[in-house]
Image 1: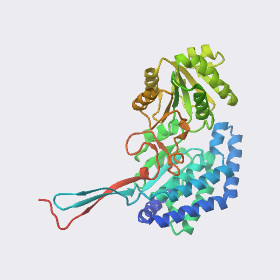
Image 2: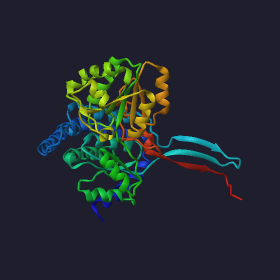
Image 3: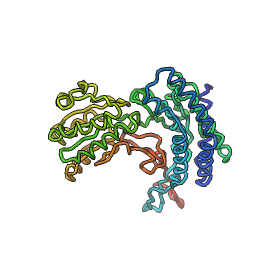
Image 4: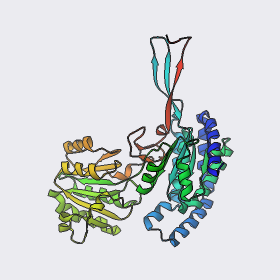
Length: 415
C-alpha cells in the first residue's frame, strides 16, 4: 500500500469509531484542541516563521504571505473558533423528518456523517484546524493536503491536533496530513475512491478547477470568488465608499473580497472620486472601462479578462453601468456564484437585485467580507460552496452530514 492508502485505511477505521462517538466526548476533544493550540502556540509560530522565511525567499507576494502568516491574535481566533464549534448543536443523529406509513412502518430520516473527507488547500494553515474541528464535531475523519508553502505549519498543527485527540481518548487517525506535496500525491488523492467519501478543494480558481475536472472522488466545489459591489443610483455614496473599501482592502487575498465595482451612470462622477480617496490609502490599482477612466484618468484600461479575474490583491475592476438590469446581467456573465452586494436606499431596487442575482450570498448595504463561517455563526467553515447540490454558501456542521432512514417495523412484509 502507498502512504496515502495507509492513511486512508486508518481514517476509514477511525471514522467508524467517530460516527458513534457521543457529543460530550467530541466536545471534550475539541476543547482539548483549543487549549493545546494556545499552550503550544510558540511551537506553531516557530514553524510558521520558517515557512514565511522560505516563502519570502521564494518571492511570494504580500497577499499570499498574509494568507500564510500566523500571529498571536490569529491563533487566539482559531482557538476561539474551535470552542464555538464545541458549543454548537451536534447534527449527528438529529431527526430531520418522521413519517408513519399506512402499513405501520415508522420512518425516521436522521443526519449521519459523510465518512472520510479529503481537503486539498493552499497556503492557509488556519484551514488545517478549522477543517479538522468541523469534521470532528460532525463525526467525520479527514485527510488534509495543504500547499508546500505551509508544510511546516501544517505538520505542527496536525501534531497538536493528534496529540490533543489522543489525550481526549479519540483516535489520532481522525486527522491525517499528506506530507508529500508533489503533484502526484494530489492526483492519487483525487482518485482515492476506496477511502474518501468526498473531496473539498480550497484555494484559487486554478486549484478548484483542476480538482473538479480530474477527481474521481465526488467533489464539493468551493471558493472561487469574483465578487461585485454594485452602487445603485440611489445609494448613500459615503456608505458605498466605506463598504467598497472594506470589501476590497480589509483582506484582499480571500475569496469573499470584492474584485469588481459596478456604478450606475448618474452617480459615477460623484462616487468614483469619493471611493478613490479611500482606495488610494492601499495603493489599489484600478482596471477601468472607458467611462470610468474619463472620471479617473490615471486608472489602467480594463481588458476583457479583467471582468473574470480573481485578483486576490490590491487590484479592482471598475465599470459604469446603465442601471440594475445591466448590473445583474453583467454579474450573471462574470460572477462565480459566491457573494454579490447592492448598495442602495431604494427598497424596491434592493429586493429586485436579491431576487435576480444567483449567488450563495447576496447582500444589501453590507460588505461581501461577511461570507464566512465564523461571521455566520457556524464557528468556522470547511469552505464556501459555490455549487447548488447538497450545500451552498459557508459549509458548517450540517453541510458535513448526509442522512439515512431508520425504518421501524413490527413484522411487515411487502406483498
